[in-house]
Structure formats: structure tokens, C-alpha cells
Length: 445
Image 1 (cartoon, rainbow, N blue to C red):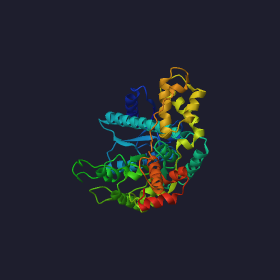
Image 2 (tube, helix red, strand yellow):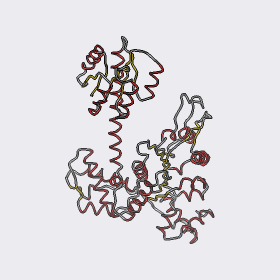
Image 3 (cartoon, rainbow, N blue to C red):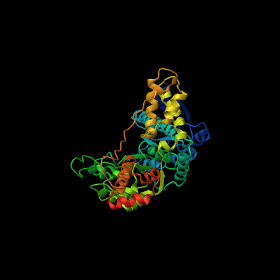
Image 4 (cartoon, one colour):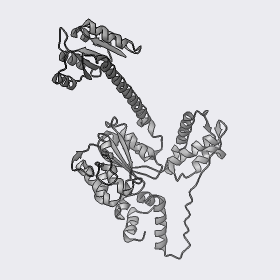
């Protein structure tokens, strides 16, 4: 760490230099005037200790010049007088600390430099993690696929990235990658430096939802032993991702609607209004139109959250991507677990292509990882690939029913199998959406 000592009193120069040079990590140089230090700013010091009363310039002038050159240089002002008003102004103008020349100068100075080191190390760690996250969710790498179905999704994600603050609603079967899409949108947007906060609405007990979202004050209810910052506040400036939004209790939906409409929240037990600046992305494996018609989801909240809709295709509609994804997961798993590189045999590929993947991409990933472990050879064969098919038996002829009743039974079965996704079921059964909605409305299904 490079430290410049700016001081016209040679006694204090030697004193400060002596104590700093005891640490071999510190590279220390001394300067005796304001103009002298300004002329050497190009050497890019990490820290400058600045005497407030220099012979040619005031401490305010030198500090302003340093801040103008590089605001990231930490300036510790050292003064012979303890002047509160001067100290406050210097700190407001960007000085890191203000230290008086007394018997505690050594301890104060070393403690301040130690705090600067910790802050710099923390920033380096954060920047490193942010770089890793940015690389992981790089739009060109995060989502794997070349099929027509996934290319349509790429186009929608690009629109979501371009329109930075628009609400996005993601729909898709379990395991299709809804959270991955949400994170890809966030980490490629202007909000990427701010938090991405995921909230699983299906995992929060009903009585705790309001506190989780909006926060609470100490003593607001039994068990509220301290103030709690809600998810909206945690996501300030960033993105809040509501996963399984269809699971939100209908009585609480109106409170979420108000927060979104007004862009403000109030903690439980408080009357203070907190303005919020967040982008909202929602996800569900259910058809929200179906949920609205069934009376389980508010229509006004549905339209407020619809925004840019992205419907993720099941893996069964992305046949061209199965091998591509399998190879990606295999390479990733081997690298992460320090396993020699493995390949898929032609028979293994054919077996993967013949399967229907009820668990979608998530299931494919699990199958490939298990195959990598099971295979003791560089090439994974078809017998290394193990499936766990989910039985979906539909006994159509157990009862004597009318044709209309059989029709309702078939449609209901497919709705349950596909998480009430009316659009998908209509497509699979080759019937109109309106027919399904009318049968729901009439109570037949």
C-alpha cells in the first residue's frame, strides 16, 4: 500500500514515517508542501496523510485538488488544533478522518489506516464477486439453447433488458429456469450493481408474509424483538423477484397491489412511509388467468404484474437443446468436482432424446450429474443414464360417463399435470382456450 505523508514539520514527518515503515506492506514517501503533493498525484497513492496548515496552501485547497484528481484516494487530515467545525467541513468535503497532533496520534493514525485496509479488502472482494456474477449471468452464456422455442425467449429477454424498469412476468413448468431468466435480466440491466432479492411466496407462512415483504418495528407484535427490514427495502435500487406468486394468499394480494401502485411501503408498527425504487419480476408455474377465473388471484393485481410476459417452453419442446444442455451440464459438473472429462456415447444421446423430462431442465441436469458419477469410464453409456419417470396414469374407463364428462376429465387431468397452464393444455389437446375457460367458469372442471 502506497502512503504519502504531507507535512512541513520535519519532526512529525520522521515520527509518522517511522511508525508507518514498521509495516513492510507500506511504501511511504514524504512531501513538504501542497504544490509538491499535487505534482506527484500521478504516482497514485492509496492514502495521503495531510497536514492542515501547510506553508503554501490550506488543507481545504489541497483536499479539493486530491479529490478532483481521484476521489478514491483516502485522505487523513492531521491538524495541530482540534476544531470541530473545521473537522466537520473536511469530512463533508471527502476526508476519510481528522486527527489532532497529540499523544494519541500514533494509535489513531494506525487504527484509521487499518480501517481503510479492511474497507479496501472488502471492496476488492465485492468487486470480485460482482465480476463472477456478471460472468455467470452473461446473456450470451447464462441460457443454453439453439432451438426455435428458446430463441423466442432470447428475443423477449433482450426486450426486458432494454426496457430497464418494466415489470416482467415469467411463466413455465417447474424446472424450466424461471429464476435463471430473472437473474439474467437483472444482471444485464442498469440495476445490476444493486441487490437481486428473491422471495419464494410459497415458502413463507401466511402470517409472516406481510412482515417479510414490508418489515416491522420492534414491539410491533409478539416476538418482534427488533426492527426487521423487509424484502422491498433490501431490494432498494435493484430487483425483487416474486417466485411462485400464485401462492400469495388472496387477502394479502391487495397489500402487495397497493405497494406496487404507490411505490411505497409502511413497516408493521410504524406510520412512516418509505419510498421504494425496485424492478419487479414475478414467476409462476400456474396459469394466472386460470387462477383469476377461479377466484384465487385478484384481476387488478394480475394486470399490474403482467408487464412483459415470458412463457418458458418445457424441455420436451426444445428437443434440439437436450444434447447441448447435457454436454454443458456434464462439462460443468466434471470441472467443479475435478473429475476427468467425460463424453456421451451415441446410445446415451439417443436415450436422452427419447425421454420426456417431466422435471424439465432441472431433471436433465440431475440425470447428467448422476450419470457422471455412475460411469467409471471416459464415455458415458446408455446404461449409466437412470430415469425416474413420474407415473401419470389416467383411468378413463373406471366410470360410466357421458362424452362431455369424459372430455372434462381429460382436460382436468392435463391441467393438473401442467400446473393449470390453459394455453399449454389447449395446444396439447388441440382445442380452443375459450372452451377450457368456459368449462372452468361453468364448474365442469
